[in-house]
Length: 428
View 1 (cartoon, helix red, strand yellow):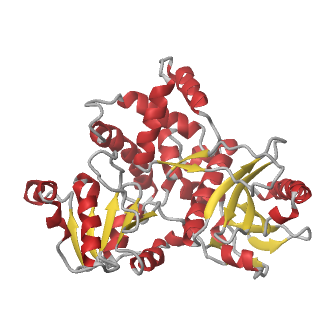
View 2: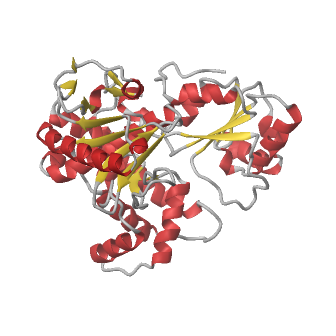
């Protein structure tokens, strides 16, 4: 099977290899154009592209008529965009049972069909992996001088990491982590994100499922714009509805907002950064509202017509989007370490931007700030929150405290024990 000569290794590669070693099939899910097919082709020995236009989309028609035909090929066998012929899921499940071997199939999907038409969940046969657009470490825009894993293990040494220009940070946000556009230049990157949004609204939305023959693309755009304005916040559905009404003078029901949010989740265009919780023994009550993110910060820029120059001219918005970029990368790093990314918020208004928890229960706390002048305040907030957590239950204390900064030229440990790490020096 022909491989992509220009393939840039992804953090998900090792996860995919691992899962193929103990599951019959792996389903890699994520937004369109994030690189799922390229990554899966690296480990597949044959493929069946369901959505190929060849032969007047003959693959899709064949797979819908007889899903078993899509399963033929040397293993691991890749079935790309399986959701266009949902019967493939059950066919894979049954074939995994029949063969009784690991590493048989790799499925990719850029949307999740409604459960109708899929007879079985796939438990025990098919495992899922979530893929996002590329992190700065994967694109080569982070040196990887500081490892998140090393922070947990106490392995750290101060280091100069190099100067970073504010416009470069702005460019990285507006460009995003789409692998097909990395070397195309700033102009192409800006228009790519805008085209991505337009293509979703004009082409994908009307055929996302069979519940309604037509969906209001205007309302969906207004919702996307509201999500962009509330990026990296815990905005409620009511807040989104009000925001849309104020911005457009158009009525939209809460039911419609919920329905459209479900569609965006099924298309992997939005991500929830859930709230962190301690053990049931903790007396400290924590808020449970998730932070909402568009799957890549470049989409926020596209929806709000932001360029690097506009970001530099609006440092408040710039700060929110830098936080979004950092949390996007931390989420990828967490998944590669078999962990999860959360945020912390209690009823005493103490907050932590990001909490990365490993599967063994250890967790690290991150505050995220664009400018170096904000480091002292961020460190103070982390220390105050840690003290309160220790007072409640010392067993709940974090393994480390860190400030991720956009415009720092060094990674170092402060006298108070808080780490300062440039985002462009971070890796899993």
